[in-house]
Length: 64
Length: 312
Image (tube, rainbow over all chains, first blue to last red; front, side):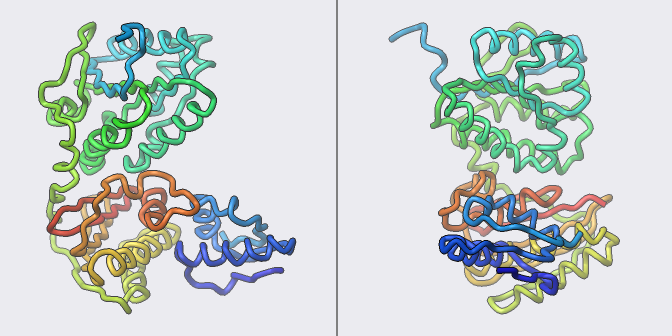
C-alpha cells in the first residue's frame, strides 16, 4: 500500500501515531506500507517516537 | 556492612576548576580510574574541551564514549534522556557507568544557563532512586558568572576543588521541586497575547507560524514551532483545564513563544525521557524538547508554563 502524504499541510504527534498503528495493522497481514512525500519533519518525528519499531514502513520521495 | 562495596547511589558531584591545567588535573585521573575498574566511561563536554581531554588521555581516549555537550545539550532538557539511555545500555551489558558532563559551559546564553541549573537539580530526581553511578560536572570558575558556580553547590550533593572532596551544605534532597515551581522571568519587552480553547488548536498553530515567519525565522524553524504550538496547546486542552494562553515576544537574538494553562504537571521529568511505545502521554513535550532550541517548563499550583525559545 502506498499512502501519498504530499498534500498534507500539517501533521502532529497524534497524526503520526495514527499512521503507525494503521501501518502496523497492515504489516501484521504481511502488507508492506510505503509513505510517499512525507515532510522532513514527519520523518524526524517518526524517528524520535521510535515508530519504526511499531510498524515497518518505507519513506519515499520525502519533502525537504 | 561491606566497606568494599562501591557507592551504591547516584553520586552527583560538581568539580570547580580554573584554567585548562586544573580541568585536566581533575578529570584525567577520574577517567583513568574508571577505565581501570572496567567501568563504562562516558564524557559529555563542549567541542573544544573534548579535544583537550582526548589529547591528554592519549591511547586511553579510544576506550571512552565521547559526546558533544554543545550538540546533545543545546536544549538542556534533552540531557537526562541521553544519560538514561547510556545507563540502560551499559546496565544491560553489566557495566557501571562513570560520566563527566559539563552542561553549564562558559559562553552559553543566560537563558540556557537557567535551564542548565534546573537540569542539574532534576538529575538528582531522575537518578537518586536508581542504580548507582557517578557523574562529575565540571564548572569553569573563570568563564561562568559567579551566580552559576555558586548555584552548583545547591544542585550537587558533593563538590570538589582541587584535591578536596566535600559535601555541599546548601544541597537538600527534593529541592528540585522548588526550582521546577519557580516562575520564569517576565518578557523584557511587550508581548502579543491571546488565549485558546478546545477548538482553537489549528488557529493557534497558524498564529504561531505566522509570527515566527514575520520574525524572519527560516521555514524549517517555522514548521518546528508550528508543531510545538499544536502539541503544547493540545496539552493545555487535555491536561491543563481545557484552555490556555499564548504569549509571543522578541528577546535580543531570539523569538519566544509561551504556552500557559491552569493545570499542574506533577512529574518534573515529563518530556525529558524517551517515551516507551505503550506510554500514555508525554510524547508531545518530548518531541518539543528534541526539536526546539531551548524549552523551559515550570509548574506549580498556579499552573504550568512552557516557554519555547528559538535563536535567530
